[in-house]
Image 1 (cartoon, rainbow over the protein chains, first blue to last red):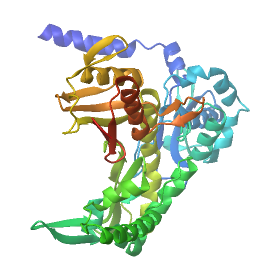
Image 2: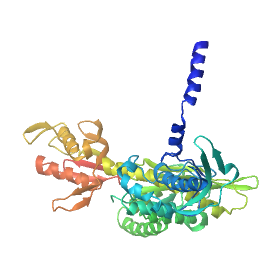
Image 3: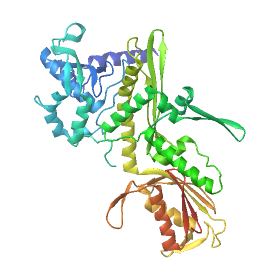
Image 4: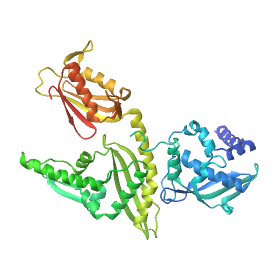
Length: 170
Length: 297
């Protein structure tokens, strides 16, 4: 019994210690790493959320947070909370990101369309609990509050042939 | 079409009570609900606006009720000139028959209090009018608030739940277009058909089989991916459930046409007449169930 417990403990410790600096860097810069929390029911056609981003500088982390806000609405959906129900992903097909890879490369480029769908942010320098300094890799993890124009985004994706309309097929 | 649930109507006093065969029955009074409940009207309008924005405009309950009244007046005139017997139908059956909505949005909500705060409980079910199955749903309660008015809380509830609800509808439509629309069919035999029953042998295409087997083959050939379930069969009756009919079909003139239960079962009737020389009659029970009575028209 003691052997089993020691084995499990050592496995846990080693599995936690296994992440190298490179792993962590890959984790922070992953395009699928969205940390998003809905903070209430938005005005008609919008979603208000708190979203985190990583970056070498605070400014980079803010840009990544904005991309994450739009990407999470498109690909993963937002869990419910603070009186708001869960919002499903706009794209229901899990492989839609790969199918339309070229489209989304352009969409999320530095000057891509994604920024049109961010209406309001707390764009000033985040502080306190919303601005965490990290070491190895050195950089910042910051949270901003954003308003995503959900209905406009859905309409754009439908018009571009990426998302299906509710009435398609009728 | 958004319809307030029976529970909502009855608990808010929008009900009709009457005696039927010695038992008292309570039915929802949609007309009274629409005329006297501003919260309900507000929720229905908001939901209609969101659905129209999604390219899926809803039929309006109030307009359908007016149409029903008109029809009821006409039916009453016809009845008085014939046997005079009344037609027994519940309000929701009459609505389904007149509105022919594919999906009924069954709605209930309640404004509750918790100390000084108010909050909304919201329950919305999307019911397929063809099968009465629930195909989508959204239920829960909103965040309590001291300051917000009930109207604002209701609007918030609708905005909060509709995206999830529509995602459920989208899944249902995707399934319907991929695997066909689900209906039920019952094949029966007229008592006075002297040529046989469903176990009588008929020859078609060089194959001598029971009529029941010919019909079974036809369903296999004409349903989407051969999907149907022969749940019960005897010499006088076949019950076919989960029959997946195509949503559209290309007709003999090359045009794409929508398929409903009647047009689908009409093809079976034509097949029986042309290939087996058997007359039959179609009787529709609701949107999603058809009876084919073989033997004569």
